[in-house]
Image (cartoon, rainbow, N blue to C red; front, side, top):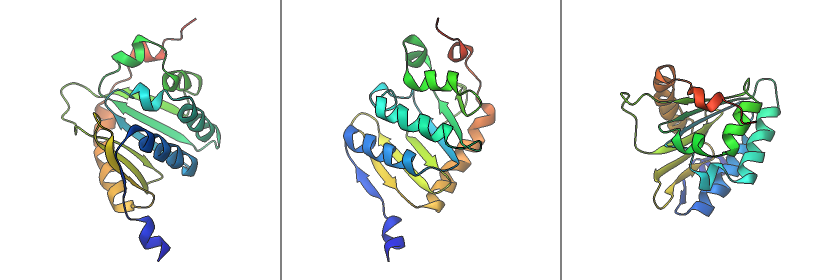
Length: 164
């Protein structure tokens, strides 16, 4: 019965709920994390606890891997962003790529962990979406989209530049 309940979506309707769900998801991730985002919203991804939890995951195992697809890197490059800093320091574990403007991508954002946990934001303006702690079917659908876009994305050279 508990397994059935864990597959139910947990509705989210504000930034605080998304932050808590993202931290929970990161703490439960063991091997692979895929993030598809407009621009790694500072309000969520630049948060010190989110960045620290992501860092702990990325360093947890030689097999740990984080792949990030973003549509717009300008806000990340324009000023210090904790996730960009982590990606620079842990370049063998965290990769950020920019989706080409010609690629048609969904308007919503998502995070998938280990092919089962899903955090999905359907409206970034009000942070409305859902969190599934165990939904491999939904995770597979989103990962298929991610895997389709990943090889078409490029590494933005500005993201690799180290600030001295």
